[in-house]
Image: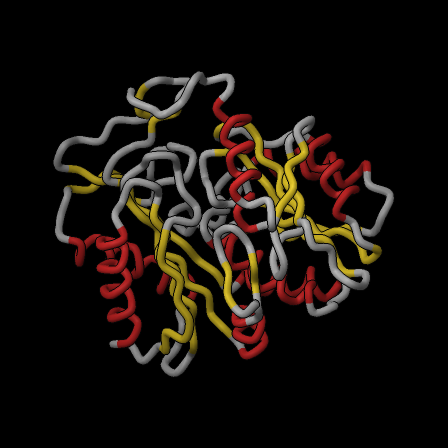
Length: 329
């Protein structure tokens, strides 16, 4: 294993210190416990959006804190849920007179710890649960995983909160976006977790892992390595079967890299995925390509589709200023 780190125990602290220095105009880092909050508070009471999860997925979630998106994010240890005290203290610091909305990826540790934190809050609060990974069946024992679609929820709801929407409206909008979003990923290699010092699973030289998770989990099936066209068809067909966008409907198409795939390949994937939907009369109205929900050094990508209505388009286009997303300001 080759990593640019000083030690397994210090990597998160040192990385967060560097992140805070690089983006001191946008965020502030609290050290004990770790959480990140936005520097510029809203001028009037607004719903505070809080998210978080294990580190190793950067820029999710810390890179999405700022105006028009999250008010705070809680980074756990690598691939490990943040603790309830992180979430509670972040929520208390970010709360701005209109309540707190937690946006939670559907992983057992995240769900449990956010629930514990919510029970300790003495302000109005609610939760949006994101479970967009269609590689798992709906009746899976723990439900579907929350993956790259989480960013879409955070951006659209973040804009609504910035515009003054109340807690009930933000919760309803978050649920609507989450239900209109589906994702699926493919890995060409596993990731290497520093604490393990080795890949989380083995992939044959001529195989890919279809339906992979973002924590180094195996996918739902290994497949023979084939052309990009074949792999993308497999991804988008599963999403199409789930969302079934009709002719004339508008979608947001997000191609997300897992950390070790060049942008050249991600844009190639985007071209293939957009062709798939355009040939079926579906309008690709908005797009996002890049490494946003990563899995350390995993090679591969995911495709996310969100069925859009005019309200969602309006909030997607609204100004945002974070370390990872910024437009309009």
